[in-house]
Length: 76
Image (cartoon, rainbow, N blue to C red; front, side, top):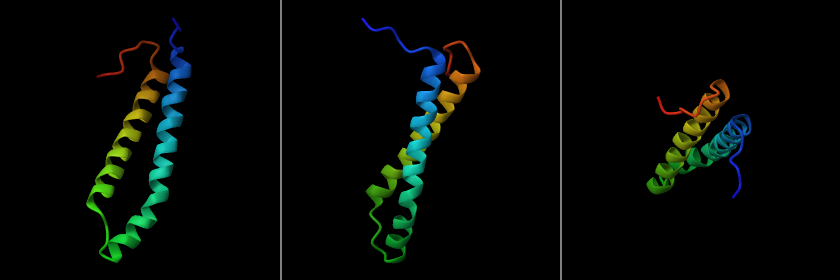
């Protein structure tokens, strides 16, 4: 059975994944704006993107907490 990654590695994985997801979502915003201006914005796509932003922020928060603390108690 494989051993889990150390906290430093796991924190970097969470921070990088969260940052990349935020960058991808930020790159999609100009398309949302043009669709909104043309009244063709799909609500489902917008909601999924907003959920992606929340997940990215949570991943970055988790990575930051793992980086600061040496314990595994990430949940407040």
